[in-house]
Picture 1 (cartoon, rainbow, N blue to C red):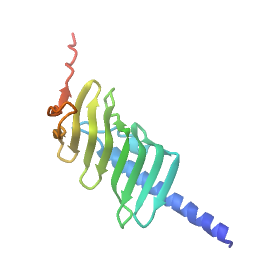
Picture 2 (cartoon, rainbow, N blue to C red; picture 1 turned 180 degrees about the vertical axis):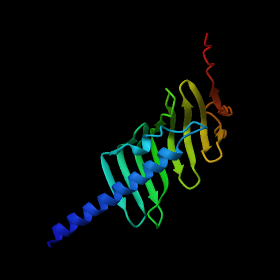
Picture 3 (cartoon, helix red, strand yellow; picture 1 turned 135 degrees about the horizontal axis):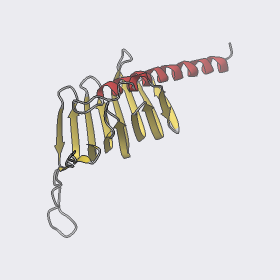
Picture 4 (cartoon, helix red, strand yellow; picture 1 turned 90 degrees about the horizontal axis):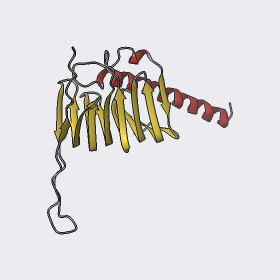
Length: 196
């Protein structure tokens, strides 16, 4: 076997491991990236996983796969996008963390029985599998339909069904010497239409 064949086989094996890791990642996300009591489409985990990016790389030593350049991961109604997406695994090759950065990084998923997607946008989106914790950092927006929560930081614990939204701390003074205005958490709740 030539060195070229050996490298090709090694590359194919890495791509298979990379694809296998992504399959497990998206299955975990499809089961746990829901918010509230309504779950994601039950058929999402049965759908094929599609991954697109300008570049994909796997670092076996750091146990991370990296997708760069308009990365898009989809499975059924679940869609995660970002300029760069990092997926981390532990020593047992189990998914532990996803980080997506972008302008903005985006996650959307359609709950069973709903017509509106649940969406999450932020400069940085982090998902911790073992804690079922989603962090939205920087210009964070979470919502479904017209209902939205806006804050600098939104934390969602899907195991406990708890959400915490925080305003950005006030830092320094503006150019005119005045204190910078404090950011606030903003929530929009749309009234339900009355049925006759």
